[in-house]
Image 1 (spheres, rainbow, N blue to C red):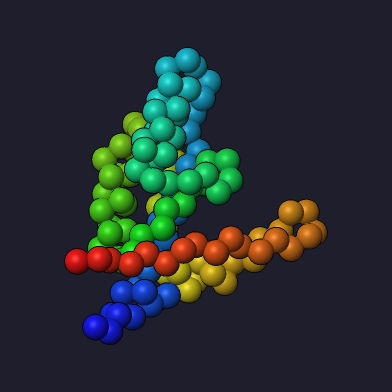
Image 2: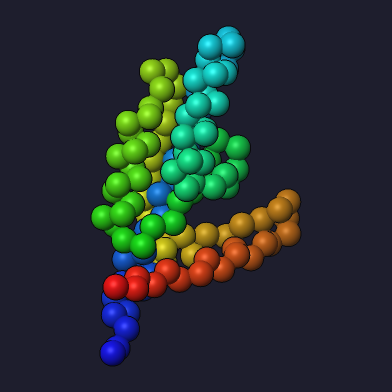
Length: 114
């Protein structure tokens, strides 16, 4: 049985990026910011940089599910951006540590077994 390569296509696989800047002046604000961060981690997001989290999804439909979850956990105050890009676009990112280039780690491809 041939593998459906369209499901593994770099234009179909998506990344959801959440960028945020939340107030942390008071104890309550810090608690709200911490809960938002923990909700992202619980939903499978990984910290890329401080206040920037990414999540890999096998399809745009799956990425939309995670975007809705983020929207449902938005705090009352602060600035949050949600961006979805293809795996191909994400793979074109250049990462540097200082002036030293750094290669992006390979993300294993996900296969559906049904």
